[in-house]
Each structure stands twice: as structure tokens, then as C-alpha cells.
Length: 577
Ligand SMILES: [Zn+2]
Image (tube, rainbow, N blue to C red; front, side, top):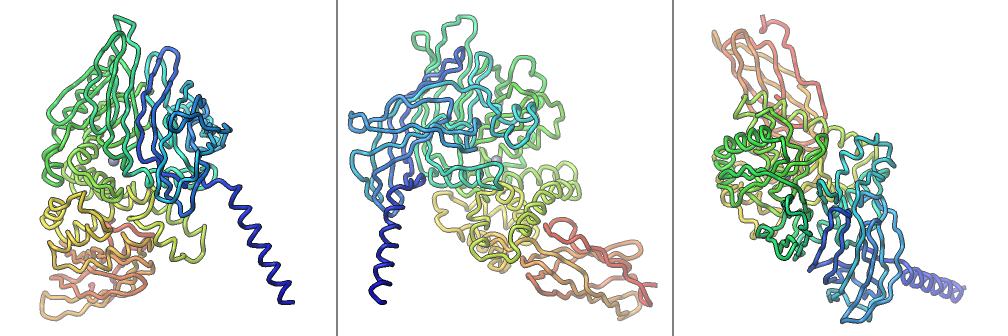
């Protein structure tokens, strides 16, 4: 009996081994460096690339197989190591991380197994076309025109704009399939890839033929350093370096751009868009003082480039912003510029800080122009997206699992709704809690290269304030405890002296995340606002003095994102009369 059991287990073990040997670990390797020569022929919509990539085995087991993926409209020509051709099988791999919905995947047999943490250099060549392709969006039912405006990437004689991983795999990647039809799976797949590639470098040489004497297109690349392209023997050449990819998606554009060049911003616009470009540049210049006051002087010029499709949604990467320059509303232009200028002034490798602050800057900009209520209304637009995410989450799992709390936390998440909208709310709440001077000082003391621990930002803010912020960061940043849900449980008024009333208010929070929430008590001819900390799943009590009988209490002016909607409490009875 005992022997049989043992043999059974032994067989199990064997099976498990065999299974491992035949399954591919597509995310075993990180591509730590790219050195690519890319030739782009707009008239043929073609791209050809050759160069060298370095792969590091970040898994815990030796790897004999490497997976390299490019867009399905490109084909593998050769893969070598040490000058010798390697055997590889090329196959289509269905994945929505590319606009075509499919990747050309090369499964490469390496000369020898690569040990954990060891690297291998591969020499690669691939080529093909990059044409407008909205297959992945059409597959999930997006109308044709909307799908094509959203996935606007293409190489073409008139206008070329191509974004990298997540849009067009024009350089090799290695990811598990992501599907837009399955919740966040495509975003998660791209998010994991970006996280693995954050410290990777890319050296990119781009060549574009310039046979046409009349038309001299401009070549733009969103690299860390990219001296402007120069012309050598009928070719435009650009030699660009990405020092570390971070959250940047390598992107290139070729178009007949005209330029508005200002102190803080360069605007590359298409023929006929002069007015819109000037409005954008003016609005950006006006937003510079506010942004500098909060985030420091710009370290580089913010660059904006026009998109040919007027319905294309904007795309940003680093301090490069791509958007159709057709708008003439200076407020909207300033709103976009405030975000972009923040990136030019302040950098963090952590998305909740980097993007959260850029969105926070937009709310500050609205407040600066039109006051606090307008800013709260603006935040409200983001908040509704956030509530939708929360509802989604609730419908997926009945009880929150603790690993989800960690994975979906602001410090770990790859969900844009969280590291943009939720993070913006967190920064707004922090400002309300610790005050503007303290928060500005904390931000001024931030150094991206010293940000080695998730708690670094908390310590910088803590150094400027007496507030205890541990619970706040725990509920909002280190873990995802969802949103608070406030309700005024009771309010009792007592007349203490002639013309003096004390109101005792109990506020409950049904949600698991605590917050410091504003409470406004209204009375005939005036109001008083106090702030009250109500931790998750508990009550808070506060006493508020008024000079007239209190009539109404409002909890939360919209500055704290929450799932509840029950905010007003009418006071009736003796004291109120
Ligand atoms: Zn941004």
C-alpha cells in the first residue's frame, strides 16, 4: 500500500517535469538593452530593422528557449548569436497587445541554457509594413471609425506615427497573451512588460529616405536624447538614446511639421493648424508659473506634436504629448499643458507619483482659474471613473482578498484608472490634510534616484508635518482598501450661552478606507467647515460651535472619493428653530 502510494507520487512528479519542459515561459527574459538600426520607408509603409538585443533570464530556472514577439505585419528574417544562425520557429500568437491582435512570435532555441540572472546577446533582423489596423478593437465591437481613430498608428507617405509596446510591437517584446475581451488582461500584460523593462535601455538609429527635394519631413522620437535628425546622402538620420525606458513607450513620428518654439514648450503642428498651435503654446506659457511653484522649474522643453486624425485620443509618453491640434479653447489647452509641463518639471519612476501629480496639477490649474468648486467638479469626472472601477471589483469578488489589496495598491498597480484618477484624489487629499506649504516642500525634497522604497514619499511628507500619515498611506497607497462611505448617523445641538450652539455630530464610515473628510455646518446667514478623521469601518465624532441654530450638515464636499452618496443631514427640532 505504502509502496503504491509512493510510486503514484513519483509518477506525478515525472508528469509535472515533462509538463514544464514543453510549456513556454514567455516572461522569463527581460530585454535589458536594444541596439537597433531601423529604416523607415513611408511611401511603401515599410519598416526594416536589424540590431542587437540583450536578454536576461529573470526566472528561477535555466532557459534554453527564448520567445521574441513582433507585430504580425512584420516578419522575422534572421536571429543569430555570436554570428551563428539560430534555429527558430515562427508562429502567429494571438494577443491584443498589438493593434493587429496577433504577434509574429519566434521561438528560438538558444546555443545553451541561460542560467538565472545570466544574459545572452542576440543579433536580429525583421521587416514588414505597419499600416492602419484596428482589428483588435473591431473584434470587441468598436465601430470602425472610432476603432481607427483610437489605433491611429501607421507608417504612410503623408503621416507616420507609431507607438511601441501596447500599440505596435515594432521592436521585440516577450509577453503572455492579453485579450481586450477579458477584463484587464491586455493592460496587465503590457503593465507587466513595462515593469520588467523599466530599467532597460534603447539605442535607436532611424533612417528615412529623403529623395523628394521639395518635401523635407521632420522626424520626432521621444527618446531621452535625440539630437535633431540630419541629412546624409538622401537620408534623414537620427541617433537616439533612451537612458531607461521607465514608463516610456518608444514612439516615432515623421510628418511635414511646422514649429512654434517657446521657452517652455515646442509645438509641432500640421499645415493649417497655426491658430490652434499658438493657442496651445500661449496657454502652456501661462501655466508655467503655477507648475513651477509646485514642481520646480521645467528640466526640459515640453514637446507637443499634432496628430493627423482630428478624432484621435491624445497620447503622452515622457514629456512628449501627441494630440490633434484642432481645438481653440484656451482652457482645454491649458489643462493639457499643465499635465505635460508637470512631466517636464518632475519625474518619478512610480506611476502613482508621476501620473498622479500630473493629474493633480490639472486640478490645481482649474482651481487657479475658476476656484475650488470648479476643481472639485473636475475631480468629480475622474471620481466617477473610479467608482466604476470599484463597482467592477465588487462584482468580481465578494470578499476582498489580501493579495488583491496589495496587487491593486497604488504602489503596485498597472491599472491606469488607479494610478491616474485615484492617485490624483490622493494628492488632493494630502494637500487638504497637510497644507500647501508642507506638501510643496516635500515635493521639492524628492529625488527620483533615492526613491528606492514605497514609503519614501510618505517619509518626505511626514518630515514636513505633525500629521500621522501611516494609516492614510496604508489605506490608500500601500494597500487597496477601496473607497470610504460616509453617513451622518446623528447630530445633537445644545445651546450653551446666548448666541452659542454646540453641535455633536457622529459620522460613520462603512468603507474600509479611512479619510479626513470636511464637514460643513450651515446656519442662517453662514456656515462653518471643520475636518474630521473617520477611519475605515468606524465612527468619528466631532463638536462644532455655531453662532446661530444649525440647520444642515454636509459631509464631504467632493474632495474625498467615496462610494456613498448620502451626504446631507437636515437638523430639525427645538434648537434649529
Ligand atoms: Zn502623464
